[in-house]
Length: 570
Image (tube, rainbow, N blue to C red; front, side):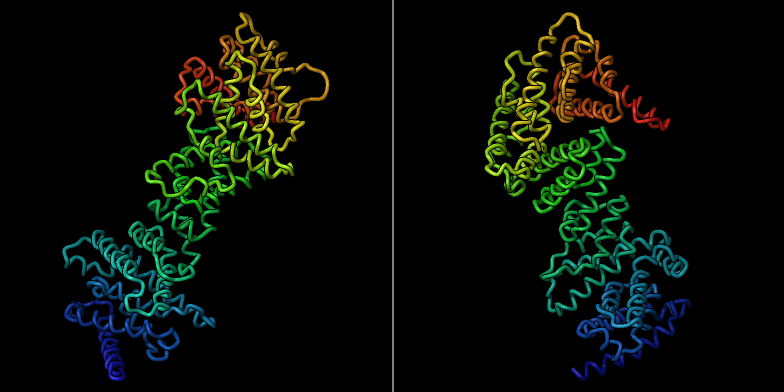
């Protein structure tokens, strides 16, 4: 072993002198001499790496004080970097020099300098063309063809290295440090297209280490580049990123919230596109990611007191998630209970059914069954806790289209309004109500529906008739806000389904839209109705045409008011 050290030191001195003579291969003689010695120099580099990987950084500097100079001169020689696996071996040698826990400013500066050399290896080929133009021309390459090819070969070598058995006869601790260092080197370079295979290999790297070995800054840089569409990664790599670094998943969700609630309000088709484009529904097929995403939706609903925009985003997300889950689980990987651990499995299965897969005549039966199960869960609790009611509502609202179907079923059926459907509407509109307040809402809604059904086939119809049916001119205490919103939705459904409702739709909506908030609510209702009909393939050409016309007109009005910077009325 001692003789090996002597031989290595002797070789070290020889190659240090050679590198000084070659001086970045600037002369023809130096280029020729470099080419002659390339195989020997690569063997030397490999021997150096085997020695360095068994030492800590302090021992390396003590044994080889000028190692930094030697490796720096190697970095600047394009002939060496272009030869076989030299650039890969050089990178691993440089990684060995990085002190994992620098104790002083000198060691920190040395670390920074080493990383700058590593960054140069990965990026300089592409931009510093003059330094190797003569060499690339002699090889018959144009510089623009040579540099990307060189970088691609080097990345391929590093990817292969990462894919090898983590032990593979090497010191495990040194292996961990090298992978950590490599992740640090990649931070400023993650947006390079040629580096994407290496980024993917690092994200999907599977070692036996008990703790995370990739540095947090690497995850943050990759996540930011991914969110800004500066890099493209396969779904598996993105899932690994979010599983290994929770802050990245949280940032992805917050970025999605910000985008949806600021620029995509009341445009469910756009919301669906943004949600799918985020890869979050696909990633949520992994239960751990789903639970975190779902928890963030829960917090958003609690923080906004059930804002309609958040509800709509949750429902579209759930639809995209279920669609992704059906594709993923051709052979079932995870039980549904893993995604909804506190819910009744039979209720989850019922809610997961797509309405279009159920015969139309059975819709009311399915809704009744849902209502009975939810009512038992909510009102059967001995403690009557708000959290229990909220959790039941939160589960149901994932599949909120069922509540809208219930409202439509109540309006187009000539039978006595079923209590189960009335309860479902009252519960979905205001989950925090107690049994007594919910019963009062059911009474109010039943009266309104009864009046609307009498008007459904009326030969004449006016806006005043609907105001009267809705009880707008009634005396006494005003209805709770949630009940007012529910009645407005019933009136809007009536306008779309009643034979003469189309003729007075504009008049009624003008009377209803007295504030900016109510106008946005009406826009959201129309948009959600059209979106749901598209999903269900509902054949209602006349109703659909009227809904689209009204939606377009209201959006134009809102855009005009917002452009003028007007007051909060439309």
